[in-house]
Image (cartoon, rainbow, N blue to C red; front, side, top):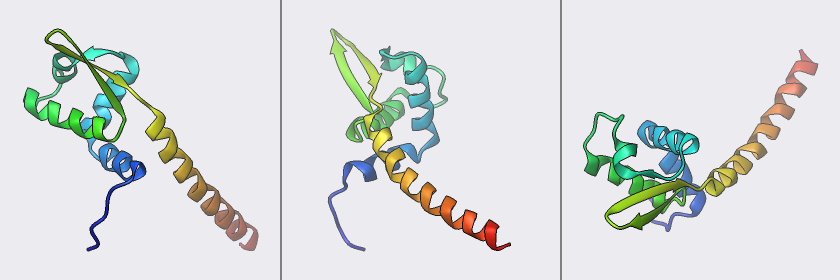
Length: 106
């Protein structure tokens, strides 16, 4: 396997691959600026586990953290998801064209 430096798109897809991280992003989309403890509350995992998920999301640029006193608040940053959507849209066009050609053939 080739060792490489991950690019933002790789980091975004890796972060979005986990269902817990996707659930965290969904929650932040509904209620932006939540404290880490509020984010962790609905999950059946430890607070350190949720913090590790938040680390992955922050490395991918999907979450921004801000510390106020002893409380850390998280905000959703959707820009990396937009980049991923643009990448996927190219392949959606490719496959749509191929399937349209197949439909004409059949």
